Amino acid sequence: MGASKPRRRMSHATILPTLFLSCCIANQFLHTGYQVGAIEVVKSENILAAEKCPTPERQSCKGIPRVLLQDKNEDPEWSLEDEGQEFNVVEATVESIQEAFKAGSLTSRSLIELYLQRIEKYDPQLHSIIEINPEVWTLADKADKEREKAGGFIGGIHGIPILIKDNIGTKDCLNTTAGSFALLGSVVPRDAGVIEKLRKSGAIILGKANLSEWANFRSSNSSNGWSARGGQTKSPYVATADPCGSSTGSAVATAANLVTVSIGTETDGSIICPSGRNGVVGIKPSVGLTSRAGVIPIDLKQDTVGPICRTVADAVEVLDVIVGFDPRDSATSAGKQWIPSGGYKQFLKSDGLRGKRLGVLRSPFYDVSNSDEAPTLEKHLNLMRDLGAFILNNVTFEGLSAVLEGVIEETVIQYDFKQDLNAYLTGLVESPVRSLADVITFNNENSKLESLDLYDQENFYTSENTTGRDSEEYKVASEKFSTLIDGVFRMFEQYKLDAVIGPSFGGFSSVPALGGYPAISVPAGYLDGVPFGISFAGVKGSEPTLIEIAYAFEHATHLRQPPESFGS
Image (cartoon, rainbow, N blue to C red; front, side, top):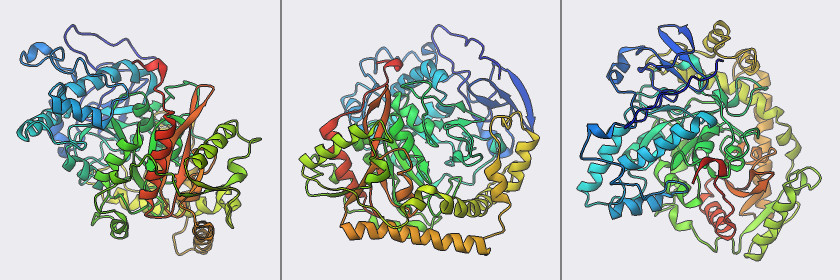
């Protein structure tokens, strides 16, 4: 790819020419042009945009200006100098923003501008965001008017900007592509279930976050945080460090204070690992607690949607909004019974570790010889013991080695991915591709655009070659898969555990992932400047207990530090 050309500056406005944009707006700095079906796309080092609307569904997007940070001279009644200049978005929490809203010292419009200024300044280095919502000003003004009508305060996440992983459908001018050109210009039938809930709460959809393309499933040799559309997302702490994936952009943008809160998805590790490696908090909910309707799937037995934030309290604030029944996701029928009356904020307790029974899968996750982080994690176990927790060392379960090996899980996912993805693609209103086979063909025909010389599509071929869920191979793998889940569950029963503890890296995420169990990652320390996290996992529906544990640990340690290179 060619190097980015210098961006033009204006005296009273700022343009984000390399960070936009939805399919209907052309990028003014062109590098290499491609023709993909009816859509002419342009590729720069950091961002891709489409030259024109691909379908009548997107005609309403036409005419939306590229200038996102608007010229103050156009609106003499409004100025950032009069409003919001004293507010520092670095490490701002939902609570601190709502307090500023209530005091009248901040509006959603000024908050959006503050974040867009940081995005324009820092994201060309990070590549954490694929698109900014061209309707963001309209949404901000709507939130401000609603707040004014309500007497100056609404609370919750009303008026708060939120970044959405690019595999979660939004029925607006934003694309939903899983980072792939194959889905550029596709049209979803409706907002994803979690997006509906976010909009109802008054949250502002700021844009789409970069991710590991196809949630890290296209190739086994891909790079965490890379997608053809968004490029390589980089750690805000150490640029050469692995930022983990696949919800990389959501974690990096949140860590670098480019947004208040974000949303990620996980099949196995995709919230927990990038949260840990970027010094933020990630909640991977029980499968069924949040809707997956409208989310590009990997495997619906394990897929889930959850918040990535800088604090446990903020993550819980978002969790309270996005949980609940969705008639388009049958798993939420069971999940709705786990939602506590009064929501999850009641479990933010500083003494939440007291009396908890916590199991340690000592081998291999706390093996000092295998992990430089292990000594620090060991100190945390002692701290939790001091705070009243019962630490049970060396818990294990039958099948642990098979879980870590991953062969059984991989086999099941290869079969499920083809079926689940084909169903998703068939349900789109418009799409250049309608099946996994179409995606493979698209990639082969657009190999330069999709960088097949760097990252192959081996996993896609394997999945496409599966013969259906009635095959003997799938039945055998599914039985073994169920046995592994039973082993994890029996471990919790045998040791009477409230949670198991492990690092937010090194394969620990597979322990809760197979059974669709929840987990929370909290910042645990830094090694050579790179963050790492500690994870607490429980059985389905145990989010209240995990929140108590995670909040108490966070409250006792306060280990999160913003990345020094990205401003204060």
